[in-house]
Image 1 (tube, helix red, strand yellow):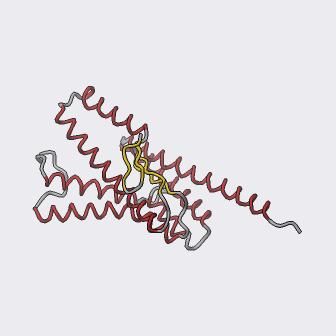
Image 2 (cartoon, rainbow, N blue to C red):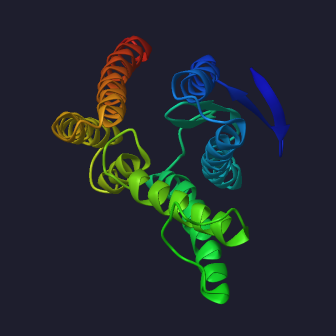
Image 3 (spheres, helix red, strand yellow):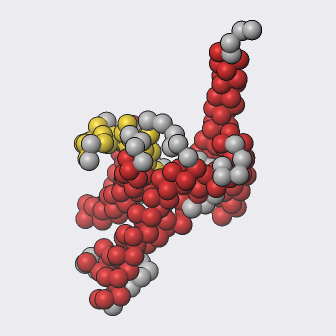
Length: 241
C-alpha cells in the first residue's frame, strides 16, 4: 500500500506490516485489555520505530542518489525497511558508502537525542515511572536509534553489517566471491541468533534469525544463477573463428 512519495521516492507498506499492526491492536486491546490511552502510548513507540527505520532507508537511498543510482521505492515490512536500488553500485567503495549511510542516520539521531538529554539532565535509559514529556521522547529516540545502529552493524548478510563486510572483501577479491563469503557468514550468524532466541525464549529473535538465514541463502542462489547466466552469455557472445 503506497503511503506517499518523499524526495521523489515512493514509500510502500508491505501487507505483512499492515497485518502485524492489526494483530498488535487486537493483542493490546482484546487479549491484554489495555485502556485506549495505554494502547496509544504503545503505538507511539511503534510510530517512532517506523520513522527511525524509514529515515535509515532514506540514508541509503540519498547516498545512492549521490552516486547516480536511482531508488525505485522503499518498502516497509515488520522486520525493517527495504530501499530497492535500480542497480548495484559501480565500485566496492560506493557500495560501502551507501551501506554505511543507513546506520549513520541512526547514529546521528541518537547523538542529537543524547545532546538534548545531557543539556536537560534527562535519563538515558527508559523507566516505566517516567511521565510522558519531551525528555521521555528524547530517551526513546536515543534508545531506539542506538539499538538500530548496533543491530544493523551485525555482520550477517544481507543486513547492513553483512553488506559492509562484502564491500570490504570486494576490495581484495571478485564481487561474486565476496558475496558468497558474506552470505555464508550471514547464515552462521543467523543460525546463532535462532539458537540464542530458543535458549532465552525470545522467539522474535528466532523469526529475525530465520529471515536473515533464508535471505542470505537467497543471495547465494542469485549470485550462482548470475554467474551461470554470465558464463553462458559471454560464451555465446564470443566471436566465432
